[in-house]
Image (cartoon, rainbow, N blue to C red; front, side, top):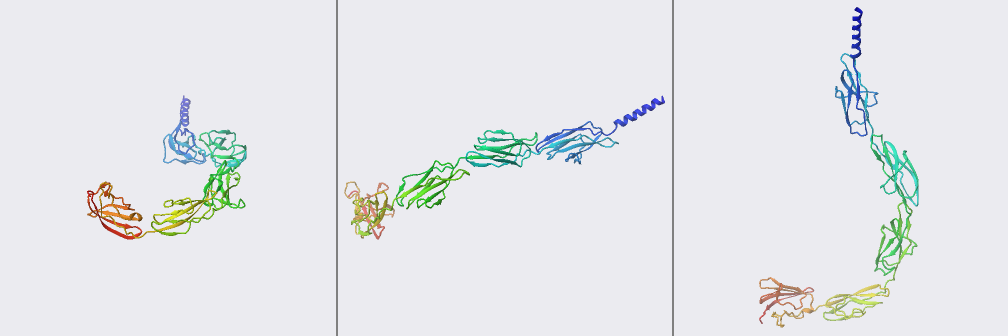
Length: 458
């Protein structure tokens, strides 16, 4: 019996030693992120004792740090981790040494960086070859891909390296690389590189906008380029039939010309991308010799009302401008009867339809005005004395007339009066009575003043 009681005591002691100790337990919640935006919780279960605090490690468990503030809960939160971080809980049963839980890690993978593709090129002709290189990527290269329709559709290329060699490319092709950093991160594509196949430069042909021969100096027009493949990089001109050329800064397909006095040859330079440039066949614009000299005669002076014969000389068909006051504007020696000082231009058209001109000045001296103004008129529509009459006024077209009522208000004015006022103001008849006038001349200091009566009943 004594032995049995000792056995019971021993079993109790052993039972107490086996179960009354710290047990760290197991943590859960391991996960993986591919972004620096993240949050979550780790859980603890199966532990014996109280949580003293949690620890974390950012070097795979080589070293551990206490979390702050102290966390005695059975779960541990995390927020926006930037690198892989492992966690464990420290558990202690009172009176017993502390124990640590299992380790659970939150894995942070860097986001996919697809990188930059280089090595694109342009080729002139039928095909091209070379090597493309991917740099600056983070992640695994899944494949390369190409597109011959500007990126609308893509064809996969089984290549997982950072370089890709191409050859025999016969049409413009885009390339890019598909990259992913672990299975959790987004798939992304690199920058694109182009392999451009250019058609050879074709200069095209030149044509005139008008005739290929123009008049001396009095000319204008353009030379137009068509049928070219590539852009115009400049034009050339030559005044000696192409023995030497002068560059012309013009990158359009139209080259204007103006006021040429010599035969001039033109050519355009065309280049398609990196292809060698091509130059058009030369095109010469011919310029007629200067027309024969023209002489409109010597400047002359006449009195108002007189006539003078113009003495033009030239070779070709004459025409005078202006035609007013000329008896015949299409002869070399017309008679001119100008109403005032006039500059006449003789225009002669030669056999090439080119013109030359010269000018003669006919100065008309006006005599002093000696006429008188009627002191009354009767604008009653009877056909007699219906308008105010000023003697000889038609010989002085530079006249100016002003008429005022007895209150000093202007009721009529006109430059170049021709005896046509019938006593109206703004279209209505003025009342009978006395009015005052001023008559002056723009080319003379003569100034006449007086009065005139409107007498409709007379």
